[in-house]
Image (cartoon, rainbow over all chains, first blue to last red; front, side, top):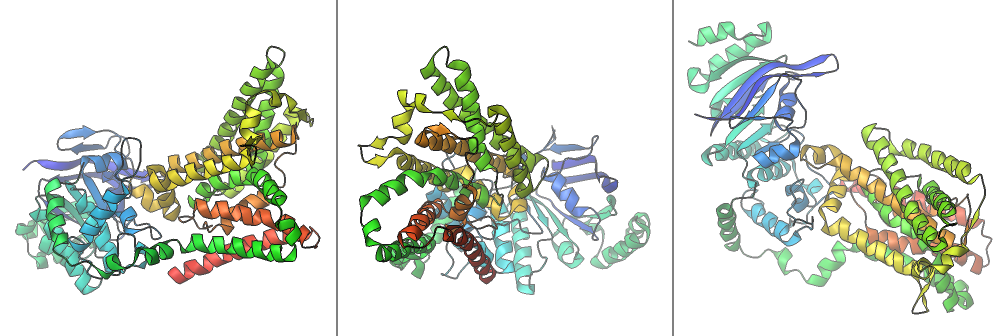
Length: 259
Length: 352
């Protein structure tokens, strides 16, 4: 299986604080990688490096489909096909739905003139299909600030899917969602797999991650503490391993136990 | 990467299968009214204020003179209020533009005096270009200080306001300059002449500024980025909007517009005062806020600013014509800023 994105020896320090240290991570074609880790484990920093928002410290390398990428920017990452659904949803509350869907990727001609009709029409289509909005009160001109948490997450995920990303990174997508909204969100992630795309699914909640991930990577205090293929261990073993990581910061014993 | 055509086609057919929503059936007029309620409200306010002054002083407001005068003098600050709308939508502020008006003219002054011995007419044109370039430079400096150094624009532009005023006083040595040589060039009729012998060119330029700014704000990628930057800077940045460039560009546009306005004002009175720009801060800001542009960023309209500039402009002559002292003017300008900003805050709270 070829890899879509590969990180080698990536570190990131902010002033004196090392947010992540020497992380190696690979995402295969049509693979869902679950990234687990406690608060402050460095998950969000890692996401922001993979999306070009932060630059890794010198020495760290990023490869996209085997090709080395120097100085990845957010715009470049989106061109390559990396889309993110951020924890904070990355929406602009006072703007219309269509402006949010096309944020940073406006449809325009080479002079920069917007194609409003196309953007509104596409948004209208997405609403009834991917987003599953059934209320007729919502139009492509509706302001997203008035949407519920689940609807907002739907907008963020739809945006990622719409641009036909090769790799979709979901940063705690179920945070703040109701049970039924969470179910719908996990269904979105399964849809990514069915569509032949790859994803990195980040969450604290192993009950969300375990059923849909092909491989699980555990991040602890800025380093990769260990990784498993899902078929290597049961949910119970995973829970045991994670409590071991919490105590020792390593998965050495757990890997052994799983075998 | 472009969206997959097949995917889009499949989605289209899914859409067609659905019955039309009631929103689509709603009459076009009702929708138009609802979507433009802010714009309509501001026009109503203008008409009410006008009607009030007309009632108090039909002799003044029933004659053409007052409108001619409003069309000539309102542009002096409307020309800056319109581009300033962009800065405020992008959640920044610029308080330095009154000094940039004078700084642009200081650049004109120096260039004009240097070139005049060789070719007086060329001196005027080069001076005009130098004036606009000086405005561009000042706007760029504002942008860089705010964006690169991360200084809040309120503080940064108070600093540059004093700085450019100081530069002007040093460069001109506190002396004014006669602007009569401009009358020999085409610039004079083009900027402060009368279109068809009737409409002041200042007014025409204000319309041009408003239309061009509206166009870029609403139909161009730059404008989309201005809204997104002001609404949620972090989200915009995460989604790949070049927030830094967008903000810098808004400051640059205000810089150039301020220099242009400075030139128009000086030409209007045919003299360059080193104090040029003083007294423009309050009415310009009041126009933007009264026009419905949010001090919290993310929303605003060029049309609102344009109409509000005329409301502000009406107040001073209106007060005098109504028989009150002009001491009331500042009080009313200040009141307008406080009330319109408070209304925005209340509206915003209701939204969230």
